[in-house]
Length: 194
Image 1 (tube, rainbow, N blue to C red):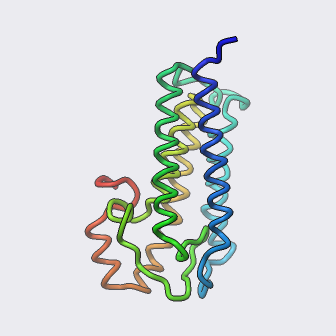
Image 2 (cartoon, one colour; image 1 turned 45 degrees about the horizontal axis):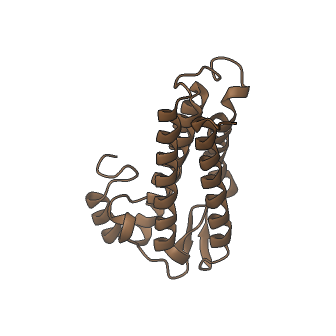
Image 3 (cartoon, rainbow, N blue to C red; image 1 turned 90 degrees about the horizontal axis):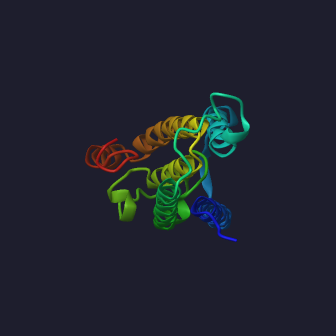
């Protein structure tokens, strides 16, 4: 029995997301002590949008119209294009996570002895973890091909944009001159563009 490239592509994308989850869970235990953490209400503003976006990306085929409208046909090209984006995003996000090291947090925080990281992927994007995760979501949406998935991708982008604004406000307070100079040199989330 021949396996369709579309199914193989989705299988590779699932493995990427499993690797991402494992790396993030393991890395979460290896961070510096937190000296400031945003409130639950502040966190809920972007988490709710992120969860809805995630749900739309992975479940659009099971939702009513227009979410289940197939806008990208299930072809070998769309499957492998999605795989390329997802694998590239995974590698970029993990690279950024490793470079950020013990300063990382899944929520807006300030760590004890917090450092401003400007090396590695942080030379081309101020928030390269989000860049990588967005590429993973874009690859997943492309491979699945449903309208709802692309709407979900947009919601994930909005969620990250809200969160990164809060992170940048905190970094400007903690590193006023240095972070302002970094902002002038490096784009936020899409290298050389945005």
